[in-house]
Image (tube, rainbow, N blue to C red; front, side, top):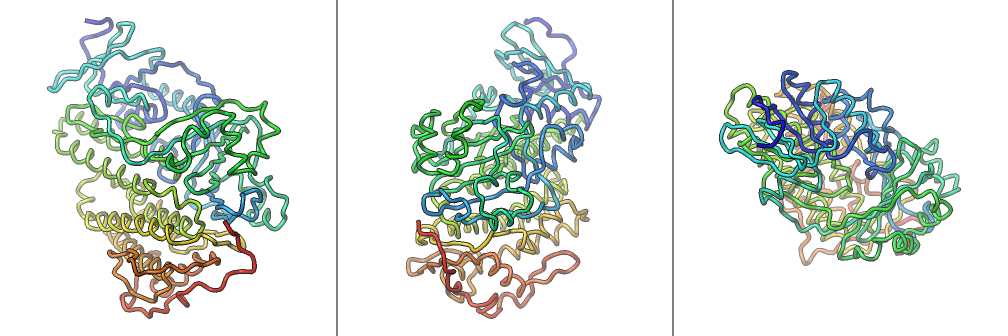
Length: 581
């Protein structure tokens, strides 16, 4: 028997002290301070704040999890900066003039915030918090094996130096090493073949400084574009600009391998050449600061799944040790939040003496369903990223579905409540079905659309009344009955958006069945240079919904509304200037 295998096992041993493992340790101790929680980390703290891992960006679920579920808003404030949402710049000509590129984003902060943060700095803070809560953090531990028990006996974790820990629960938070997943043969790929390369520059470079055009700079006041997670979009790729709390900038390329092969940008020299060809404004900005580059890293074929993540035999995978979809909408911390919530509930029920067999099965199915749902947002979708109209509407739709359902359920702390979820199962299934149809529709539309659109000014999605309301009301307190009503009405609004999408794409004043959204072989799409779609959508929904007690409610007459609702279905004539690709 290895050394240190005492007679009294720990309650939980977590492999890995990254974001997922530390967050889970904190959550478990906050839920039950009698639990003996040990975290085994092969490295040592403190980790470097600026040269450890790629800069991270959170959206609503991840931010809410760190700030309010874990209560770390104060301690983490020094590791991050408030984020002005997600921002997108679509192609124009050779992309050398940023003010000519159609832009989708915010001018002001949303009510429910999100952040950009330094991974290393945040992990250091979370390690301090975990220790303060009584978590045992063992550093310099390289795990050699895990001996899992399938009965009520304790599991055993064995290190390379022969130290060992016995525990009722073992949680794998080892990131992409996926120790348990590989040991148990649970590795699963997917059809999303994309790769990434990124680097940091120790200079406070800002997107706002890409142009001296006064009109463009005034569209987002006080030079605040830099505070967004900025996406520079093109066919088959997007390039991020993420500001970090230490004043440096993280820049990274994510590309579909079918359009931009990995070996065209997988070295610093190749990346510079790639930027010069596809994103010359970025290439020009970073050229004078080559000596300030901190690192250059790559990840080939980053997306993957898992056959199983939670087990009735008291083991689980969390964070990137389980699944990873795509960084486009910054969902990494969302999936940490989802998995840690499920694991915490399982450990708590087990500690109370409950049989967790059915719960583990249900949570496993639910989590993998979330993974597959998120995967559909990215798989096969990168080709449309160069189309300002279709990609903008896809992004707005994806926000809509996220805030209408998944994020709402998380904020209301319902994802781990099977009894409540049974009440909204029909709504969740319908939203998922609508989402699948929408993704296929966007792909088909982009294939037929020439993508010539140009916007006069910025496309500000904050101007969509229903969308702003849904984002704001994530944190609103609902009774169970109210929440059921809200989810039903949200789904009805999504159905109306399907009707509008078909009308926008085809110019046909037709009231389609939302669950049959598709382009037939006979459908022709309107080739427009006028990116007026957000105003058109807002006008369409204004005629079909009422705001009742703070809830966007679809009118009964909407199903038979005039085909001219929202004004002329055909887009208006284009502005004087538009961008040829």
